[in-house]
Amino acid sequence: MTYPPDLLPRTKTVPFARALAAHGDRTALVTRDGETSYRELAARVAATAQRLGEERRLVLLAGANTADALVVYLAALAAGHPVLLVPGDNDEAVRSLTAAYDPDVVVLPSGGEWEVRERRPVSAHDLHPDLALLLSTSGSTGSPKLVRLSHENLQANAESIAEYLGIRDGDRAATTLPMHYCYGLSVINSHLLRGAGLVLTDLSVADGCFWELFRRARGSTFAAVPYTFDLLDRIGFAGMDLPHLRYVTQAGGRLAPERVAEYAATGRRNGWDLFVMYGQTEATARMAYLPPHLAESRPQAVGVPVPGGSFRLLPLPDRPGEGDTGEDGTGELVYTGPNVMLGYAETPADLRLGRTVRELRTGDVARRAADGLYEIVGRRSRFAKILGLRVDPQQVEVLLERHGITSYCVGGDGELLVAVTGDADAQQVRRTVADACGLPRRAVRVHLLPELPRLPTGKPDYGAVRRLASADGGAPAPSGGARPPAPAPGAKPAPEPGPGPGPEPEPGERASADRAGLCRLYAEILDRTDVTEDSSFVGLGGDSLCYVEMSLRLEEALGHLPADWHTLPIRDLEPAPRPEPAGSRGAAGGRGTAETPGAAGDPQAPAR
Image (cartoon, rainbow, N blue to C red; front, side, top):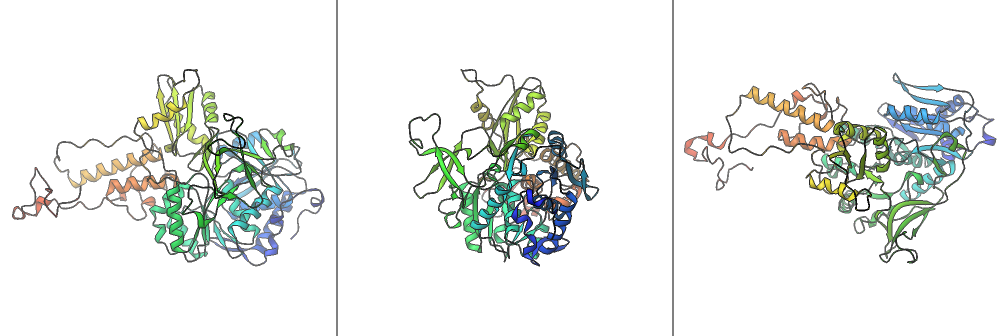
């Protein structure tokens, strides 16, 4: 394989991206269309590297779990071009980051093909020799602040992950997370390093087609964030026959300890391991992992540092003079290792900077237990993990301020809570915040208040904002806790039952009313105003974040969950047959009356 020869002597590259051909005819990629060997992948990467040229340039790539996007990513790393990786499914993110960083080359899908847009032959930027990759932190708040990662960061992190997971060249990992997300990208990097296979797909684990592909490809692992486990519950994952599955990884936010223990036990029974992991984009994804044999007995721990890394606990500012930690053994968790970022970038001028960070202050308050395992007990800052995405509430407040709206914003239990005052439109606020943060709209709860709560000092009372969530009786969106998902924020409570049954409607009238109710349900959960009886969950853009809630609510509404409901139009979603009224079996049966249907003493009375 050949790469631009004049570039190599003076340009740093990522070793695993240049060593693809060494894995020969082993399978590199599996898609619904077939398989690609490492030799074939290396040839495509080399050809694309030649096309990107010998002059080092900033390449903006719209990330996607496709072979084309992967080839461009690897070609840029192999030839030394820094990559600005952005969400390929978010046109606004592509536009805003293109405007903010003025890339020299833009690569994105266009009309079913991938288009390389050459904006200039020579870079407009002063690019530091160590700069390899630019990523948004693991949630977008509309800020152009990016993480600067080096070639060493990418290589070291891939090697570390491959070591503690024990990745083999025969493994095949499904791409269950987006490429532009540091966790999803780390799966790609670590498996390519070891010559393992990638099952490239953007299908949800809730889709039966995903599991057909996973079995056919002999999938051995997949990555999960907390809400993934809600989906796995719904599809009966614990009972699936997956003969090649070796392990499941979890990161992207806290999974409730009882859920960790539950899935670790499921894995033990079924012959696979659960790796619970902890990390941040600033550490090129991973900082700690919990050895699988401890997941059932120590599910509340994040574990031990990854190979090559180390932790220390920094005294908290409100506990001076107490040594390394407070009396309860807690302190701010600080990580050191070769995967710590170079620093941040907020403008194109920052791309010329080298290393400005030597260690990573995580912002998490932690303790080191007697058994040597680290436990996270809280946050120093107001950053919140919502459905696996990291959101800065302060940036949300700044965003709304630009729209002339004063707000207080905090992270709740699986949702973002926004209190606003004035004549703001709550639905518009919800849409604006959700779109900017990359969250489903149901994960943003907006409260309109006469005035915003303040402490006696005049500072914002964020505790009062959090209490609003429990005061209004709403339930959070799913976030990996033990509770199943509940109605979407802002959902109207079910009407109180009347004093007794009214006249039974005609079947046609009942069917029409049922379909109208389903249309309202779809509109509520998907936040759409264009729902008709011909609409389907997939057609309305429903995603895996909404899948669990929609399936639960639909099953409740229909009395059962129809097969392939997510692809069926609403008009084809039939309710379960209604049980025959007890009184209709004849007076001789004596089973109930109009006043007391299904009397309590009747062993045949239907459950209510």
